[in-house]
Structures are given as structure tokens and as C-alpha cells.
Length: 230
Image 1: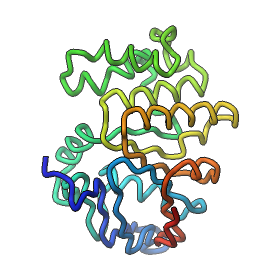
Image 2: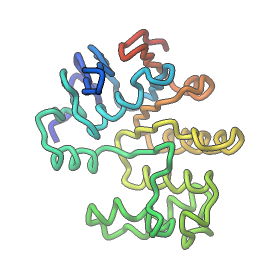
Image 3: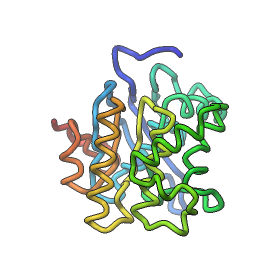
């Protein structure tokens, strides 16, 4: 591991993302520079279409910027091919998405075990059982996603995200497909686990009450960094 740069776990410099459309080139992000230190919880906020999810994808190495650079714990992502970025993600990152992203043909236990099995961990079953119990699903190990409610599926996804003990958790509208009460319970769980494990949290949300739980805000407006507020 190359190590953190100036104590920052994530460093973006002059980040830009441009895509080609039928109407011509479209700039989704322009000139975004930011640093996130280990242990911070950061909300990325802004109206729909402001570039929040695009920024999250670039910081996590799921996509490649058109310009600028991203360093993730010292790894310069634009210098890596997809396999290299995948290795960095496997080493450092957990994800929670709005759409849960569970594999329908695997049980809850198997979904949570999967990232550990891919990493060759022999304690995959034990750790997956532990995390599922922690999120209140110790009795639902053999259930498939279709047999679980939306809130239960998101709790499985949270268990899967934390099971590798990631340094960074990226969450993209994690309550977007849940009703208010269920979403509130999921968020309590997310922040509890985050505090217990000292994970750095980067959270995309349009929910102001959810953003208020984070220690810092990054505000995007039409693909540009508008302001940062504590």
C-alpha cells in the first residue's frame, strides 16, 4: 500500500467528467477538488442531476475521470487499469446502493460471504453470520432476496459492505427505495456500524436530515463544487 497523502484518505484534484451525447459533449463534473480524511463522515448533497453519483463513482474507482486525478489512500486511480482499480476497491472500499444490488440466486448469508470468498478468506461464513446477526437478520440467513422486505435487503447490503472491514464506505442514496420509517432504521444501523468500525463514510443523499448526521457537507451545483459546510 502506498499510504495516505498528507493524512487524507481521498484526494481529488481538478476532477472532471465529460460524456458525449446526441446533442454534443456534456460536462457532468467540472474542476472538483476535495480532500477527505480518515474517519470523517461526509455528505455529498445537491439537486438531482448535479453530479453527486458521478462524483461518488469517480472517487470509488467505479468510473474514470475525463480530467484531473483521484488518489485513494495514495493509489492514483487514473494510472491503474480496471483490474488494478478493482484490487484497490477490494482492499479499501465497501458500497451500499439505493437498489441494494444483491445477487438474487444467493441467500442472505451467501451474498454477505461473497466478497470474503473472492478475497480467499477462510473465515467467510463466520464473519458473514456475525454481521447478519449484528444487523438483526441472524434468523434470515437462508432467505433469498425475493423473500426479504426492502429494509431487510438493505440490511443485508450493509452487512456485505462492512464484512470486509473497509477503510471507506461509499453509500449512494441508501434509503432511496425505502419508506421513511424503514429508512430511518437503516440509517441508524449504518451510522452505528460506521462508528463501531471507524470507517470513513462518503454518503450521497438529497435528504437534509440524513446529511445533517455527517460531520461535513460537499455541495455540488451543476457539476461544480458550490460550498463546503461543517
